Amino acid sequence: MNRIHEHTRGRTKNSKRYFFEIFLTLSLIAGTYSCERQTNWTLEESGKIPVIDAIITNELKNHEVYFYSSSTSLNQAPEGISGAEIILKAGTNTYTFSEKNDKAGVYISDEAFRGAAGIEYYLIVIYDNQSDTAKAELVAISKLQEMIIVNYDSAYRYVYYDDSSPSMTYLSYNWSNNTDFCEKYGSCAATQVFYTINLLDINQTFAPDKQIISFPKGTTLARAKYSLSDEHQRFIRSLLIETEWRGGIFDTEQGNVPTNFKHGVQGWFGVCMVLRDTLVFND
Image (tube, rainbow, N blue to C red; front, side):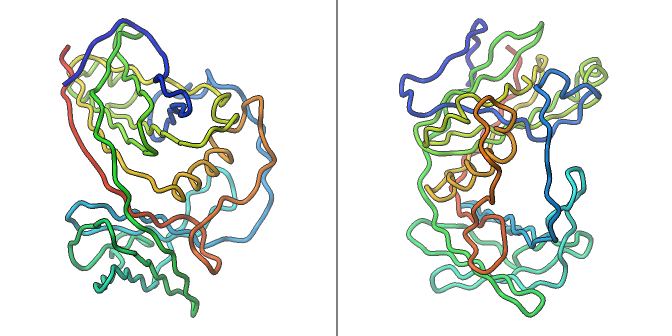
């Protein structure tokens, strides 16, 4: 499944697409960000905005929708919005979502279903005597590439190469069987997200460097790759320009991230095909 290479780094021959690694959730040592360029954030005060985070996939399961209020400060956790009515219309089928009792703002479908190609999906959210709707369709996905792992810093690291079509790939690491590594990093797990954005952008090309996650032998690597529609990748591009790509040498003026909702709700509703695989790396 995996190939071991000497430490090299490059891009695919199709140079229109540039790979981008985004560090998402990693509870590591206190100096996590010390190697990154400092960015001074200027935040404008604004009222709380309702935000939806919803991805329906082709997996047969009870799908989840996250509905919360935007934060008014940089490190403030978002507050879940309770009491909303969330409905998904998929062709001739209708699916309702109920809020989890123990998690405000987390809504789960009342029945299991899977997303399919050729169907128009409409997510309807009703809250505070208001309603909003977003539309999405599932697009195809290219196959998962072979995992490429190289030697790095007396351990190993995963190398992401550009995909052949727009996608996002979550890569989760678990080295809980290595107590020394857990103690060294202050965590036994980590997650990265890699994007292939098929839109040439100077901010992406000259984005600030991100921390590389190294891992020991015996680590379990689990990948989940999601297809992205053209509209979905444009949303992610705008989100990255406002967040992870800031601090580079070609920063642009901050603006509003687009949404596919029509009447005030922010965020994104997407329908994605997903592929998953798992590797226990033992060289």
